Image (cartoon, one colour):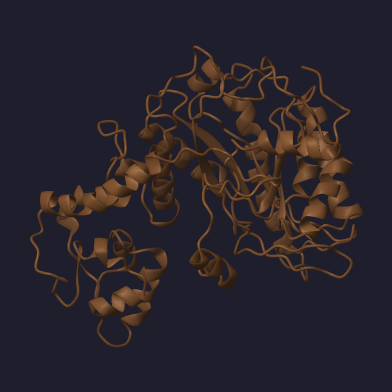
Length: 460
């Protein structure tokens, strides 16, 4: 279908913001940069995720496609070439105006810009580069920008764009080459991984170059054309679709682990498959989008990145799927009861991290507090330990919080009650829309006075 060029910019925004809703790669910025005289905006490493849509996606970024026209015909994509949907495209100037106007109104704190492939990868990547250049140098925008690298585009264009963006991403889409062949025959694994490798090497080379240049702090961006920019300072990410192809959880986690190790990715995002096209090649999932499975993958991904777990510890070929009613950490602990209980007064940091209910911060606080007085359960609770789960797996001074038997079946029965309710709540979620700039946030009933007070004073 031909691009409709006569549309007003607001009509374009409605179409292209809606077309971007299935991309789950919004995240915290991961980069620190102050506002400077003569520039507009700033970004902080604490993150941009202040507001979330009903489906859990961050909406503090202006999240749009440059165009929903695409030369590819991926079977799972609403914007595929063969679909009869309204098509439009922004100009670089229009994206800049939207970003600045929304920023000035305090609607957003940055830009997430993706795109269908218009005419060719090079043509599309050049348009994205022009847009970022205008934002940075003509509009002096110093805020956070996340942009997609288009597989197959000229490496020079990706390099130039990477010097203007904070984060770049290349969507792997599906965890195996076979899955891509079946549902996205125009794409290949090697073509997707090539820009990933380029971005990885560019980040590493720029860090080495920055370290060797005296007087230029790492991450310095500046507002003028004379300052040297850092290449993709917030790193790169990717996304995999969950449930469109037969791969199991173990295969998905193994793919994510390989990406973290081989390409230094900051995040792998998981997007539950939504059957937006009527195609015989696509599965019909009885329960709808696998939101609970997506949730478990995110939990396990957290364990890979911050808790020292490997994919092979969490799952195996014999046990390829996560437990429906237990989070991956509890499930792992119950399968390794020989390692518990852990004495919190003497256990090392990495052992504490493996205790359900003990997070990275609480583990560090426990280690620091042991230099003083002896710890007890009330102290652990103040440190952020979730005793509701942790007390089955720890002792303080050789004592448990309550008298209990270290029996796997008993502990499972106690833990699964809470998790069963959470699993049901996640499975019942039925909204897959990102928040629109043109409605009220999809409220189904009037907020109470207590809700209003909480919103005003930040007590959410």
